[in-house]
Image 1 (cartoon, one colour):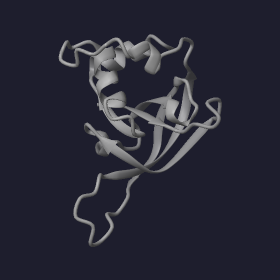
Image 2 (tube, rainbow, N blue to C red; image 1 turned 90 degrees about the horizontal axis):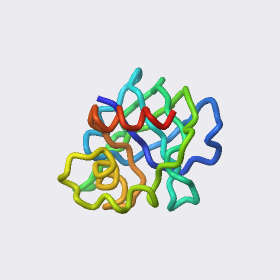
Image 3 (tube, one colour; image 1 turned 120 degrees about the horizontal axis):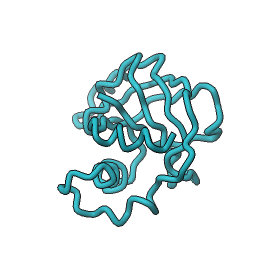
Length: 136
């Protein structure tokens, strides 16, 4: 499985990204060293959407807080950047893909990232990963 992360990215050209205690959804908690990941600079944080792809060099689950009943799994990851995106792909490009059950990669990304606009790590299908490859 490949992954995508939408979060604040201050410098998309950085060689390495370190993200602490990131929320996970849609299989994101399974991320591990060696996995490929697509990085989206969160528009909520002033970003532009897809900016880079890379490989996870470190991943560690964050322990749950004792006494808190409902907690979203969180993971800290370090990612080595392999390539920069050559075309834009963000909320503006994905917002028209509203039929979340149509099987299109754009619809999967719209659903996982923008239905609930919080920053998060998500698992993506092989078809979506192949679609994202076309941006590099």
